[in-house]
Image (tube, rainbow, N blue to C red; front, side, top):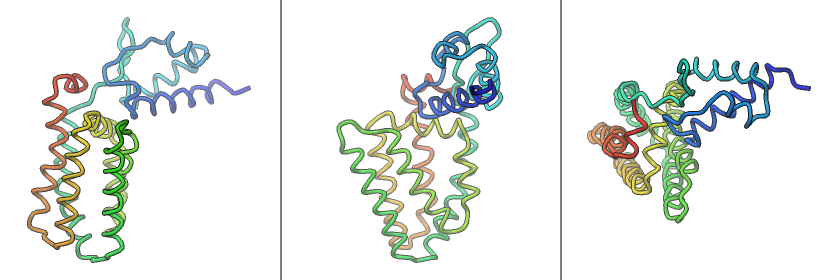
Length: 220
């Protein structure tokens, strides 16, 4: 029989994934009893899991109230995008210097796969997100900057903001158009326009979410 620590870990990991994938959307409330019932677990492992989730910033434990999935910290997201826009500009410039046709072909292939997802009437948000992340990761990996990419990926607030952005099918198409602009700049070795394209690409997601009355409710 699994000990309560093992049960707590399983509950923590499952709820974490459900929050990051937006199955549990920012701001939604639930109780300790809800968790006990869903996972058929006693209060001890459930409380342990929920404390870990709170420590990670995934949920807000509110005294005498239901627990709430944390909203997306917009200020933190803006700070990360500020840093990423400057760093990724340098990353893509260095990627251009590598001048490897096979790597450029890999980028093009990933964009084509993104378009296939968008063309599907039942567009898969998670699938599109993973393809988007894989493409950006390729640039960082090619120039030896994976730890920096992982740092951005590890932000629960930034990760969720990017997923919330592509809830809107139109946003997926805008993201692809941005990717094609970056790809064309890479092919043409046009480093002068990289920062401007990236700035529009990265801040565009923030603007789309902030200006959508329904999605803006997920922000803090």
